Picture 1 (cartoon, one colour):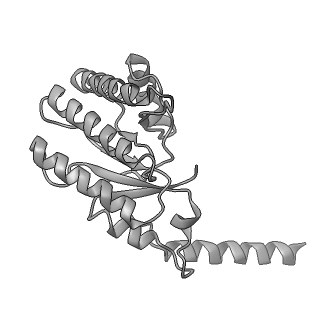
Picture 2 (picture 1 turned 30 degrees about the vertical axis):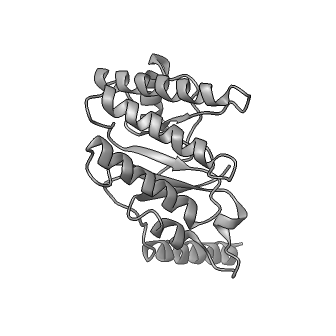
Length: 212
């Protein structure tokens, strides 16, 4: 038993040494991203609860926009994006937003890509205009169901266009990636596509989430 314990202690010591030699990565001034939570209500309940959660388990206030797939999806998309933007602007003015906040757009599939980018445009444009030409601190757009670098670069270009139109500083809209499809984990040649996905963001990508 004593020999087994000594062996276990030696293994633990090796693990600790290996950890010390491994770079944590990321920007030490920022918290690493966590899996975005789904918040359907955006009013005072979100901002108060989100702020408490951000200090306890680091769940960021996060909004899914345009989830309705019915025939009225186009109309709902407009009203949802605009109403949520107004709610967030109100929270920004009142100082009640959680320290990390963002939106998760729809996937950039052939069927949804136009709607996804339109929702991004509606939300950011409304928020910036209502909030006095500013975005919340640590605001981020999360891209789900990535199939390749083209999805990331398309959103990055849309963000750059919005920044120019709204007179925001270049790079003001940060991106996070959801790594949840086989194509985002393993490329056709067997390599990891993560570097290419991050590079496609043109310096906007600040983190990635693994999950569904």
